[in-house]
Image (cartoon, rainbow, N blue to C red; front, side):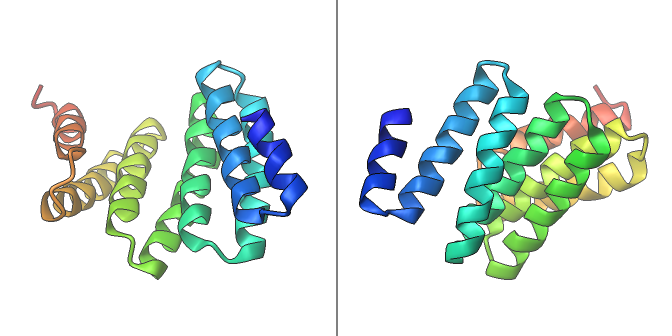
Amino acid sequence: YERHLEIVREIGDRRGEGAALGNLGNTYTELGEIRRAIEFHEQALKIFRDIGDRRAEGQVLGNLGNAYADLGETRRAIEFHEQALKVSRDIGDRRGEGISLYNLGNELAKAGEPGQAITRLQEALKIFEEIEAPHADQARAALARLKGDD
């Protein structure tokens, strides 16, 4: 990914640069270097906003939300997932909307807001079922945990 980043910067490919930065952010997340991952995601976010790639913007906002969740910064994670949800809804990205709702539900549960968490997870499940996304089982399991059905 570092080499990819060098190449796309050399040729002036801004979308490719954003993608490379996002991939580096995801890789550092996998390595457990969350603060470093956030730095790359923030750079990617700026590029995607600059070039008007709303879908990629929404994905990076979700990645930032997940990164802050990994750090235990629940309120910050919620803020990023709410932004990702807005972008997904603005562009009609149903899959992105479902994922954002699912992530929001999980973070709201951690924040001690089970009612809102259940609402968001139910919304996510409905979307996942409508679009036949494999995430439906995860949403059902999260709802069962919150409702005490497990």
